[in-house]
Image 1 (cartoon, rainbow, N blue to C red):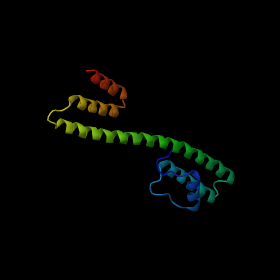
Image 2 (tube, helix red, strand yellow):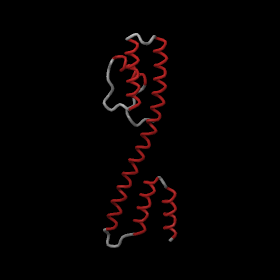
Image 3 (cartoon, helix red, strand yellow):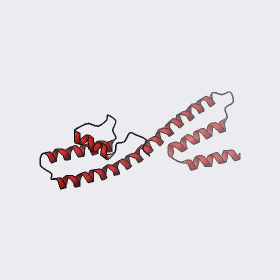
Image 4 (cartoon, one colour):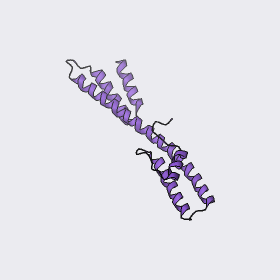
Length: 138
């Protein structure tokens, strides 16, 4: 499932063949594939590549684009998770600061919010869960 405006190899190939550029926010794998195809086209037009070599290298470009796109999607998923954690931590910090301003702060709740922040920051849900379990017992 892609969550960015990725292009297919066929779309990139068509743009490269027509001499068109890429959209301004094309992904890195799409840009690399486009550059590779433009270079192949230039080499073929200069006579440095025959049709068999061109087909073989285009196939390599297609396979590389698929591999790099898959890796890029994994990278983007990590970035989204990190961004979500930052947003959640920001909300928790605001809640902690607001809780500290209360006439009688709920220290246990504030501690749990802080533990959740640390758990998200350190990618350690186990410690946060253990702390949550210990504070519920007391």
